[in-house]
Image (tube, rainbow over all chains, first blue to last red; front, side):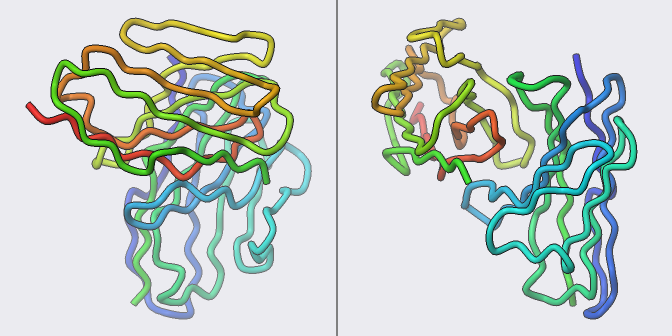
Length: 115
Length: 106
């Protein structure tokens, strides 16, 4: 099976600091990775789609300068929450896809708490 | 974004009964996928149905797809308490619907 590793699982930070979340495909090359955030008892909200070697495509309403996404290789994408504030506290989860039109493989998510 | 929408939002049934969850989406798709999420956060892929398929089975799961109506349904037959979870549909563009919380009473 395909494994997606997401790190860290949880992070607590002070307001104003930046936090980086990593998403790695361990045993396959991911042409596309997706980043989501999820609030309690709600669905996953797609933040951005990341293709290796190109700029991420952000969903409407998602600040690209606030949520920096880098997909520098076929096995790694990172999400950096810059100058985090308490309202950025949420569960962030990534997914990866081997090839177009195939299923997604999910990381285990990162719970971010900004104090 | 290609958001899907599920109906109903919450469903409570007795063990052994069938559970049907519906999903609608707004744009064209190559495939539609259903996922399950337990309270422990991880998402599990259940089934993928392609745009040229109308019905697909996997164990106790049955998925239908109507591209003309831009809708899909997930049927879980002979439900078990362990099926209690949230269920989501997602388009191949990666957008998820609102989700249905299924509670199966023992």
